[in-house]
Amino acid sequence: MNFTWPVDYDRDVSDTQSDGRRPVFAAERRQRIIELVRANGAVSLRELAQAVHSSEVTVRRDLRALESEGLLNRHHGGATLPGELSREAGYTQKVSLESAEKAAIADLAGALVEDGDAIVVGPGTTTQEFARRLTRHAELAVVTNSLLVAQVLSASPRVEVMLTGGTLRGSILALVGSAAEHSLAGLRVRRAFISGNGLTAERGLSTPNMQVAGVDRALAGAAEEVVVLADHTKIGVDTMVQTVAPDRIDHLVTDDAAPRDVLDDLSARGVRLHVAEI
Amino acid sequence: MNFTWPVDYDRDVSDTQSDGRRPVFAAERRQRIIELVRANGAVSLRELAQAVHSSEVTVRRDLRALESEGLLNRHHGGATLPGELSREAGYTQKVSLESAEKAAIADLAGALVEDGDAIVVGPGTTTQEFARRLTRHAELAVVTNSLLVAQVLSASPRVEVMLTGGTLRGSILALVGSAAEHSLAGLRVRRAFISGNGLTAERGLSTPNMQVAGVDRALAGAAEEVVVLADHTKIGVDTMVQTVAPDRIDHLVTDDAAPRDVLDDLSARGVRLHVAEI
DNA sequence: CCGAACGCGAACGAATTTGATCGGAAATCT
DNA sequence: AGATTTCCGATCAAATTCGTTCGCGTTCGG
Figure: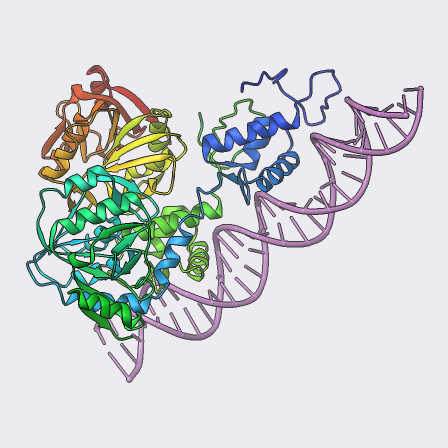
């Protein structure tokens, strides 16, 4: 925990540890290095060397060992906390995935919006793409719990954006939790445009996360009609928590690679289909 | 404490928190670039270079690398979010003004936060920079109405971010209106870190916009202590709506180019000063 | 008491990063 | 459409950092 440094005064360059003072164990030094990196987020090699009273070569060696244990990340000139950087690699990869399908779906869904509408838009990459189309409409009121959707719409002055409150879920940049659900309680809009992780005819829309499911339910509950935006990779798959029952879904916008039988089942349950041709 | 950048590496400082400024790692710079692009939708090359304190050549190299990872799209003059050339509103230019001062102020203000704190962070470029420092702390709960602050903190799992609801004010990417104020009503945190457009000893903190003023008041009201982050360009100027009275301000963090007399007046009114030396 | 093993620091070549410059391409203006 | 301004790509040079080898001193086991 706390280290008492036997002697901390000027150690000259040529000075060695021949004077009977207790040597600083390597483990102590490394512990100190980790503390420094954790405290500052990122520390330069030189600073570390000064701080632990060792040469830069030694610190480099330590950093190499610590990196192999996953305790920190090395960079040119120093080290940083692991995970602090290089984040979001997974997220943005999703954006470019099937972007043609998403764009086509978003285009088609845009036809379901009219000037002067009040709508709800849920989180997701498809709905984000959909939101981009909304800037053309005049006098739109959009309620969303997605920071990305809000940001997309922030530029257009003719769209009024209302964000729900709530705690931020960093992985999808959306607001969840009871505060988010509660802020939707008194709301009533015409249509909700939401996505999800899976859609089947039997169980409807679903998502693998409980908190996300709660808000999705609240989003759908605030609208008279529910529009689901889902590309073909989600049609026919079921995930953990059901969010919207099949008979509560009024429209489904998807692409023509979706399995035909599932679409037919959905249609039989009263879901109006909008299939984008890629 | 001198803040000269090229560290003289002959001196052996026993201080572990060395004051010399650390070189910015390439990974950090790229992360910063991504954040800037995300936040503004589209940023020009020149502004990016200015913001990260590097040459345009280096930024160009970074952009090339980031594009190959699919993290952004680059084209003549700058870079945009991947997926769409959504915004044609020209590259925003308010990205980096007096960024050195802001960074120093943010550093200083970071000392007013402790692990386990619950704090409020208001909108503004300075507070955004401040928020970047918060990722080092453990078990932090942050309430904010700024999308940019939320986004900065979204990457760090040790910080819980709560966003107020409300209508989005696109120009500053913050939530305002009665919903925002109402969502802060039942809240009580230790400190509020807010910025503003002007600060005088007579009228305290002020901002030119009524709606923004309302939320600022609510933000300050939710905290036991109010910390104002303001660079020297805001000290001594008064704008339309008063948001926080002088005697409600407990701390002021600013830089040493602020007019001395105003600081003295503020100090006489009980405001504790933290002046960053550039 | 002695040799081997180990940790640490110094030195030097290699590799990486960064900034500057210049010709050519692209966009904008007239 | 032509001219001009701006921006991009590539090569080069300087600085910094990294990896490796070697030497020195200490410690441990016999």
